[in-house]
Image: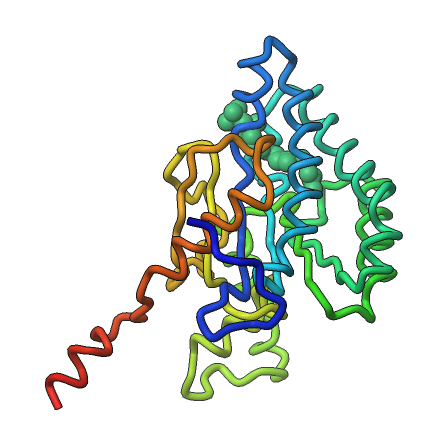
Length: 252
Ligand code: FPP
């Protein structure tokens, strides 16, 4: 059952949802098409999902667009994914900016080409004053790389005296150096296509997120599938390592 779209945020709302958009290749293969067609259809699924997310109370949406491991794919596929990132920003940025969406891009910048870096800068700077909805694209992103980079920045900040080595809350202190530091905690991580792995996505942030795996291939994704994932999230009880609320009350 899908929840009714809401326009106010409820206490059990999935405020920050993250998605591993998997299954583009299989979607294309099933149709006898090259894999790149699957990625193109994947961009349309992303557009549908971004549009629907605020109606379900989602304020932040983080999507895995390109991983640090995706460089191992054939050069033509890598170049298509780069092209799609550019095309998505070119075709949708004005509308996203007008609709109050703020775009964030997380991931390593070091081996991206100048044209991609320009597109990322343009997307981030032209939406920087928005805060109705946050779209965070993980591009050239890996969870381990992000933690390693954060450790490097943290160490440098301690060495320069800018940050204490310890202020009594080491986790909160370290977390500020992750690329996701700006957003709220991730409530729900969705992976499509039936695979049940995190594949190096949001490793630190996944600690207390609910995980929902859906059988739908990413190019077929949209409002209905997002609603079903959120309904499953809302039916779960999040305990963060504590006891069930009823058990605590019964124990007096
Ligand atoms: C996984 O499908 C998907 C990706 C590696 C890329 C996701 C990219 C998009 C949805 C389009 C680009 C959007 C942006 C913002 C860059 P897969 O190819 O691994 O599918 P398979 O497991 O069926 O082969």
